[in-house]
Image 1: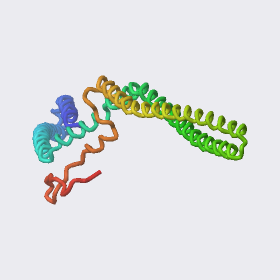
Image 2: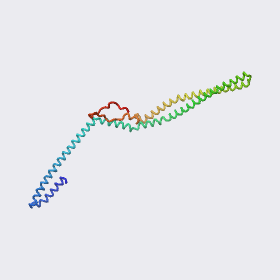
Image 3: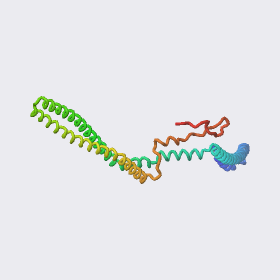
Length: 251
């Protein structure tokens, strides 16, 4: 039972007991009840007093704790650390780099397709040029062989047969000359294709950079590079004071 309820109960009891005051049998109980009431009131007053002291002490402890916490936070540079952590988290959450990569890939795709086509054409022309060059060597060698047959038959007096071999050798040399011309032309085209590919690549890079800048002017770091900025908690010495590490930790 609380002190307030106890006092209320005793007060009611005394009011009821006043009707029995003339009877000496109840006098002792009434006197004791009055004393209990006084004690209860005194206890209630003391309780309020200590309750006030407790509230004052709590307020004092809260104020001191708040001040001590603020001082410790400042000593450990927690605010700076928290700001750095937030900065890193902002970089991790920043979609700019991802959007820039997508835009760059989309812008450079046509150039990459063109470069691939040019490379395929270059390989085709180069292969054809080599094939024609090989055919020229074979035809020239065979033409020389036919001319040797022609010379042999002429020496043996078989001029008609020698003339046939000579005519075949001449035609084969003409054919070889045509193939040689084609080989040179195809080789020149292959060189032109090869020269054009770096220019296409440069234009692709320019288009990619322009597209990336449009969606991410700040040139945000991609997530895989943010780890360089990973934040470490403050180092503390034996006395609990923040210090720098002895050497930089290389990731």
